Length: 247
Image 1 (cartoon, helix red, strand yellow):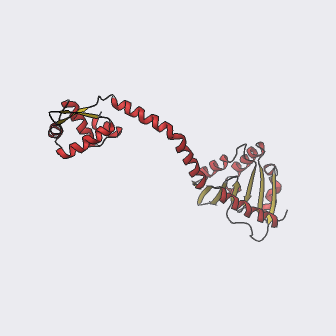
Image 2 (cartoon, helix red, strand yellow; image 1 turned 135 degrees about the vertical axis):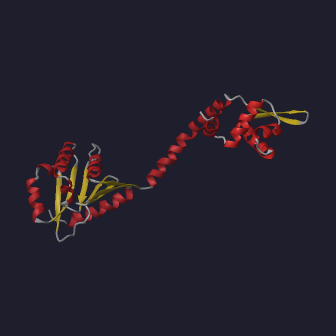
Image 3 (cartoon, rainbow, N blue to C red; image 1 turned 90 degrees about the horizontal axis):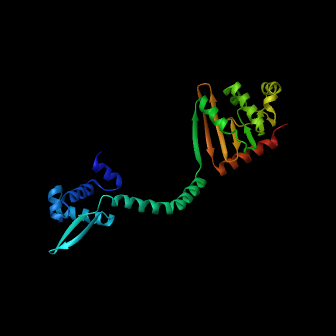
C-alpha cells in the first residue's frame, strides 16, 4: 500500500504527508532537520508544519530557544476522523433538507431510448397510488409500439383500477380499433377530435409527470419530465381539448 497516497486520502497534501513521515522517522526534530531529510525548502517546511499543527498531527516544544517538532501518534488520525464523522452526522439532517428543497425547485428530465426502455418507462406508471392517466396526441403510435405489450399493460392497469381519459383523432381506423379492443379500454373514458386538432406527440400526464413519446419506426424514445408546473400546464391543456372534443 502506498503510504503517501493513503495519507492524501486522509486529507494531507503530498508534501504534508512527506513532512509527517519524515518527522515520524526523525522523532523530535527541528524544522531545519526535517527540511534536510525531506529535501524540501526550509521555509516551505515551516508552513507545512503549521498546517499539520492545525490538523492536530504535530506539536512542538521550545528547547534552547529553538522549536522542536514532534509528530502525533498515527493513531491520532483515527481520532481526527471520528471527530469529523461526529460533526458531519450533526449537519446531515440540515444538508438533507437543502437537497429536498432543491429537488422540488428543479425539474427532473430523463430520456429513454429504444423500444425496451420506452416499455420500461410505461411499466413504471403502474403503481397503486396512481389513479388516473390523461392521454392525448398520436392516437396510433402508442399501440403500434408493441400491440401485445400494450394489451398486457392495460390488463395490469385495469387490475390496479387506474382510470384513463383519452383523446383520440376521429378516424374510422381508430373507431374500428376501439370496437375490437373493448377489454383493454375498461376504466377508460374517451373522446374524439376532428381535423388534426389533437396534439401530434403522444403525451401522458400523471400526477407531476409528463411523458412525451417519439415513436417512429426508425427512432423510438420517450422524455419523462417530473415537474409540478409542467404537469399542471399539460393538465390544463388536456382539459381544454377535453371540453371541445366529442364523446
